[in-house]
Image (cartoon, rainbow, N blue to C red; front, side, top):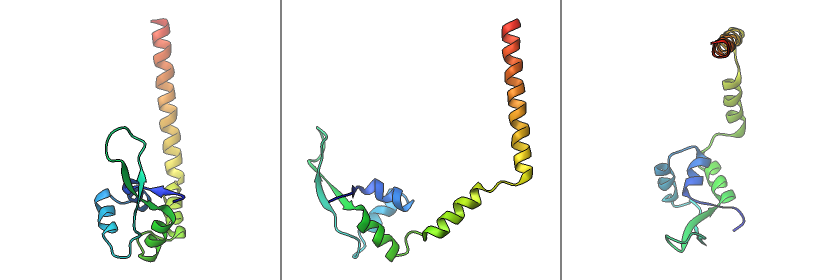
Length: 110
C-alpha cells in the first residue's frame, strides 16, 4: 500500500464528518481496506487503512466530491474582496496600529 489513509483522513479528504465517512465505507463499491500494523505501544496491533487514490477515484465516481474547477471557483469567490472591504480593513488596521502605538507611549511615559 503506497499511500494509506485512515477513516479520519477519508473524512478530511471528502470534507465530511467521520460519521459520513463510516457510512461511505459501508457502500458496496467502496474500496476494501487493508490492515496496516500500528507503531503505537497500546491499542490494536493493526488498523484499517485504504489506498488514497482508490478512495479518491471512488469519490469521483460517486460524485462525492465536486470537480476541481468548481472547488477552485468557490475558493476564488471567497478570496474576492470588494473595494469598500479593502478600505474598511485598511481603516481598521490603521486604528489598531494607532491604539497600539498610543498604548506603548502611555506605558513608556507613564
